[in-house]
Length: 148
Image (tube, rainbow, N blue to C red; front, side, top):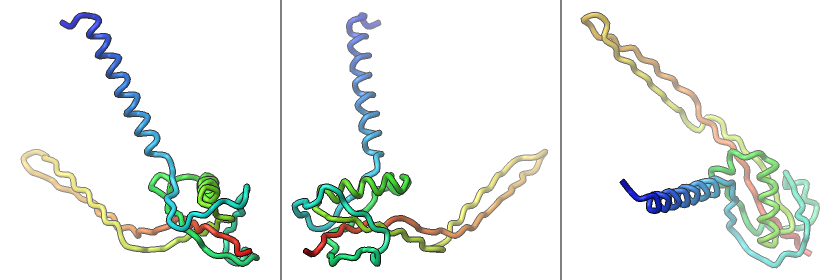
């Protein structure tokens, strides 16, 4: 049996390890936008938000694109917009262009389940196969810099 002081030290160390593990797990699961493109000095305090290219009335160029991590794809659209705006401010974009896409039937998912059971002196196997289409959807995030 361990003395109480060693036992308490071990408990304290385990609490620190578990709490650190939980923090790492929670922060790794937060939505993020990964930016690829130019980084320029910020010129605006507020970022304009567009949902179609046709609604941008000023001359502009695309300076970057954002890619959502797995956790962001399951986030609410308003949270994705807020993340995109924060990223735009950091990277020097004047506006963001967020469009969505939906690609139907990009393949098929086949799922089979079989159950084997013994009844009396025999064996019975039953099965079920499900085929369903796979669709893809998500957001495209472009970072815009106005031409002055």
